[in-house]
Length: 278
Image (cartoon, rainbow, N blue to C red; front, side, top):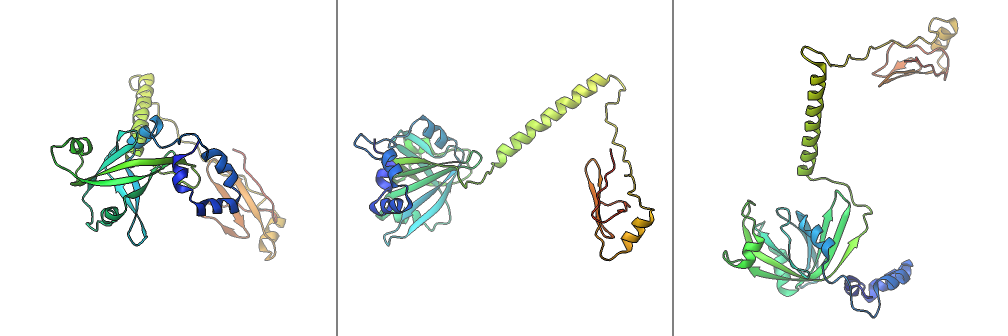
């Protein structure tokens, strides 16, 4: 079975590069054949993924052959599927350079990349894009414009999908939308409030359920007063290392220097470790 995306993207020069890299045979087995092409119509997984996106990247090519990539954004689901081969979105007012619009006047070929950073998933689309005017009362405008989104739509962009492919998650950084983070924080706060209410109910009237703070204990000294310890500390060649084990901090000294969290622990011998038991 042939693969619509590969049929377009795997040009002779691309196949030659794959051959040099050793990946050509594998792609030939997976993406090429005499049966009708796949990946030219969007399935349920693709449509669901597209409907969840807030932005994507759009690539066009100028009449001089230069590619141009631009970010397109809007409310969640602003890129809408009109059917299994057609996507459309309202193009909102921007910086008025109109580079993509100008490129599309001479070459309607486009590439879209949709990213889900939280799940480390990306979808690549190849297609042809038509720029259309938006009349306030036409069906396309009603389908694309979200009245709650505070931006001015200038035109409609309609993409006929020619092929698509899912990319591997390699090298995609994990990022979360502020809205998703806030939702998680709200759920955490609600859980904390519920637990505190349960504790208060268990304590009863006038009860105190507050946990007592842990008592700090000073670590045992490492033979600090012994003659050997004092002579070692005076030696310029000696290196000492003493660790006092504590619940959430460590005291480390080398020679006579102490860290910012150090206590007055004194080391007894070069390269010797001593720990107080808690």
